[in-house]
Amino acid sequence: MQREVMDILKRRGIQPSAQRVAVAEHVLFTDRHPSAEEVFSAVREGFPMLSRATVYNTLNLFVSKGLLRALALAEGRVVFDPNISRHHHFIDERDGRVFDVPWEALDVGRVEKLKGFRVRDYQVVMRGRKSGSSRPR
Image (cartoon, rainbow, N blue to C red; front, side, top):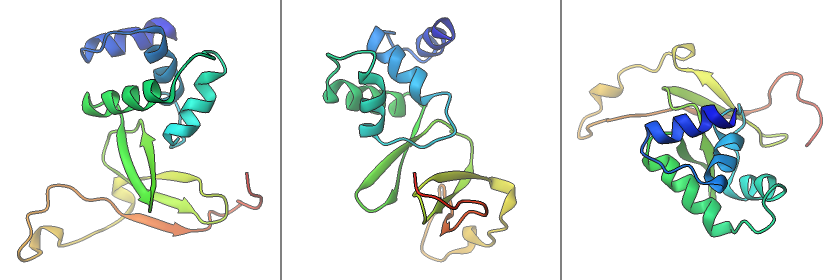
């Protein structure tokens, strides 16, 4: 996977340092929506000298290069989403996990008819409990 990650980074004009590759391996192939702190904790296991600043800078670089989306789905908490296609989100109130919801699963109408607004993009964020979700993580 490391070679694949290096190729992805190079195609986006990112110099693939060992730290960047480690962060990319953790965030680009997950269905989770990790925070910067979660990425830092996970990647630091393999890179004990890794700094928070390196992780934050790397994540922000990936966002600016279109590899990730930064999402403020809850007040004061930013998570990173490797799914850059159009989709919505569902947050399980029981354990806080964020799930992708396919764009076509919801019928949101007349956004383009909002008077006084030019809508460039939108997404729906739903909150509730996912069926079968019974224990906190």
